[in-house]
Image (cartoon, rainbow, N blue to C red; front, side):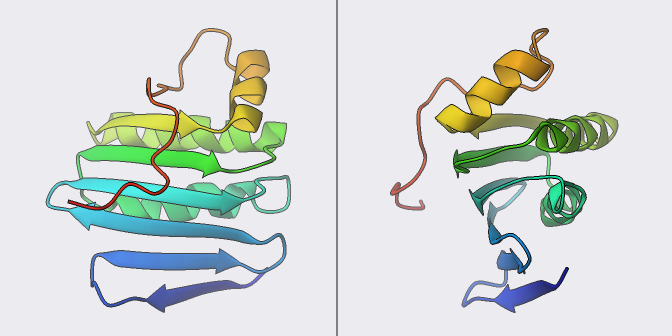
Length: 131
């Protein structure tokens, strides 16, 4: 598995590509808050790297929105990755939420019946201009 970090114009924006299963993680930060938009499939092959990349993108920030509206498929391993991300962010005292795609919502309905993964009450952040 190859992970490539690509710098964009903004020093606060990073893109990670996990080549084996076509997963992109795009980070946009503003002050102490960050939005992390994920595109592609989260499966058994890349779930651990997905969790690592999200934790790395968060850094020291205390407000996190994880936009998964671009994820058309999430395996059960992806939920384990979300639990790992949640545990990390709770230890860091960071507030966070997930904006799920329909596929992610279905998996969370099955694997997170207690609602431990915080879901946002909005449908999508795609196409919203940054402030």
